[in-house]
Length: 310
Image (cartoon, rainbow, N blue to C red; front, side):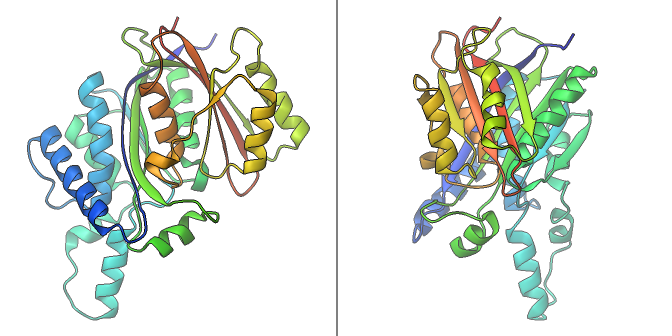
């Protein structure tokens, strides 16, 4: 029998990378620095902006949930640290001989997860997972599996930062016309403890390359059966308008949640969508379905409950 898994302390921050919005970006960076100072009591002088972004969300969740030192860290990112390598490569090409040794350390894919574990004194499993548009979904799946096999707490989140230029971010994130690029850091603690939980993870279904009929069979357990008819439905950043229309058609009573006006589009924006769904949930029990896809046809449906979770 599977162990019940609950969400605790959802925390998120995000920024829409609007064109010609330099002032907005600078304000977000100042807020980010202040957030880190408040969480850590000091600045992270040698850390990159990506590490600041990851730590700001993760440490906020840790502060509220206060998980034990055995907690695992599951950091998801689709693009990783973009700005540090760009700066290092530019300095190298210009032969400036001014590359900081900390920049080489910060470019390592798992440095942000190391910072989080060190600052929060977490000694459990520590993974950085990057699988494109489904990076967060893979991290959530790994954490959920670990809990089913004995881990009691897992800190799970998705983080991606804006590229040095909006054009570069749109190219790397493979955005469609009209999608506003963004960046964000969204986290929560998973555990087997129901007390003070923000929600419960009910199910997570995965298909490799589903046809429409397969997708509808995938939805079937979530539509009216076992009391889990979704009250809310949200989507990942790569879900097509056609798939959105299909879901709305078979779930006409579900309210569609659209977080992208707040966080913009980036590979791990699904973490922000679910975190915001947990934070904005009504006090009464409600059921939410989150659907995500990638460019390879893989398809994930995540069902979770908010409010008073049994």
